Length: 103
Image (cartoon, rainbow, N blue to C red; front, side, top):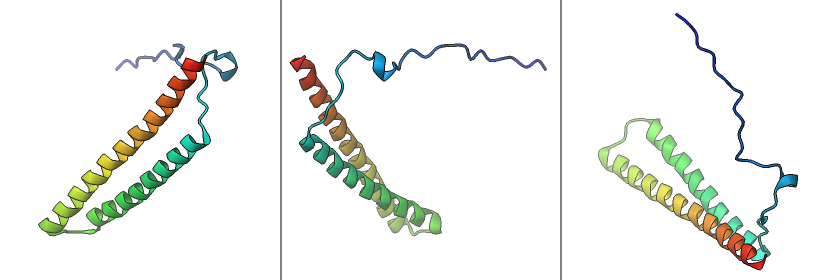
């Protein structure tokens, strides 16, 4: 069997060193930072609850009603976490767009 070599000489051009970056830098206001911190705290609490749900799933045999309840709760938490992450992303996009208009 012949082993093929892998070429790792390709250059990644997606990232630029900060000193060479010429575009607008995201500068969040204090209010934006507070909103993001509050949203992130909610995400952290939900992820903690997800951890406990996962432990209940793995703990042993569950009755169908209990399993359905936990699965539904897990789905709602995951959906809510995605929504909050989108809110954080939108706050950052809006701030960057405002900064671009000022330049």
